Length: 239
Image 1 (spheres, rainbow, N blue to C red):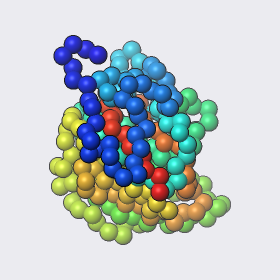
Image 2: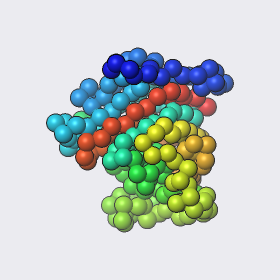
Image 3: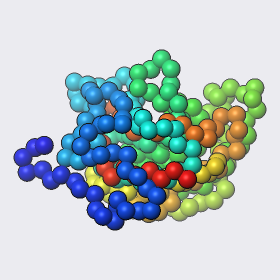
């Protein structure tokens, strides 16, 4: 810890929510697995950092080792630098051939809040819902190829069923280079992403060929310029 730094201590309110269990002890990466080049614990936070000396060739994840949640709620707080790009992966699987890589659903996070809260499927169907969208993902034929159904970094089977709010207005609820609260509610084939208590995106996944109903949970540092992202107060409630 650097001189003068304040160590974050979760409040009683944060730690006593019914059914939620802390999955980060605030002191170590016990129960998590990733590349220590990019991940550490500092001042009560999990810190993911890319420096000029450690530029990434592919996205790298710190993966929780406590199981493969199916239906769950996840709550945490995140603080990301202006040029940062990160995310929370869930119902994911190890992506073969790439170190510390996951494939699956992601609650996107970025320092400019261009994408924070959207649903992006890492290394698979790409964007499933942008900020301010409730979508249904249409079924895909088993014979279809993933690449044939992706256009402009979004899934062609994405059908917007409801506007949750003006995207720019929703972005103004997110604090830049400060702590924001994320809350994921994942049940059955419905995935809801909240930021600071506001529903930012919702996906109803009817694509039985490509969807996953359980899987790994992890946090990401993304290829790109030097950046830092911090996570704290990570609590999981399995439903």
